Image (tube, rainbow, N blue to C red; front, side):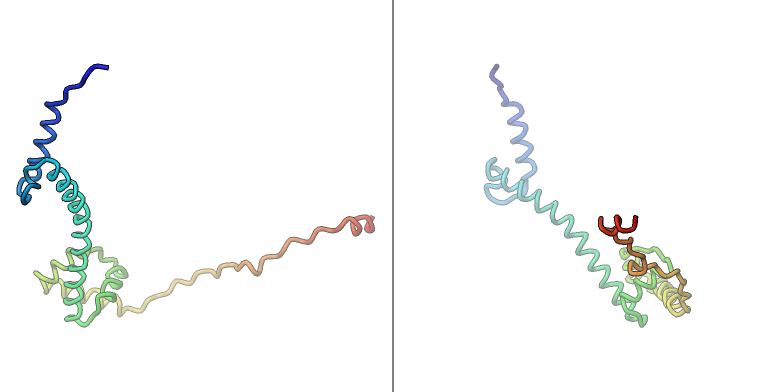
Length: 151
């Protein structure tokens, strides 16, 4: 097997790693072994925190919506349930933005939800389900003696 010289690819790899660690402190920016380890950790933290950012933002939107709906005399949970009942499909990000920047529009949405909640709900009657207790059990098998005595 021939010998492989990988100076060009190795230099390129090291150069790109050190370029990515620009701005890191101490030897983690210019010593390859430390930079490689620091970069591995930094990339894994970045991946994890992109998920956490979504979680944190959703919590913030919920807080903003809750504060605005309570001013209108409604709780957050009842407001969200009312949105679903009235089939208003606005997500929490948009609702939080409306609550913060356009309180009059948000108040109109809350009034729509309140009107939808106050309307009497017509419950649909469905046929009762057959329970397993009402089904008949199969007849027991006759024994050999009973079968011969019947003949």
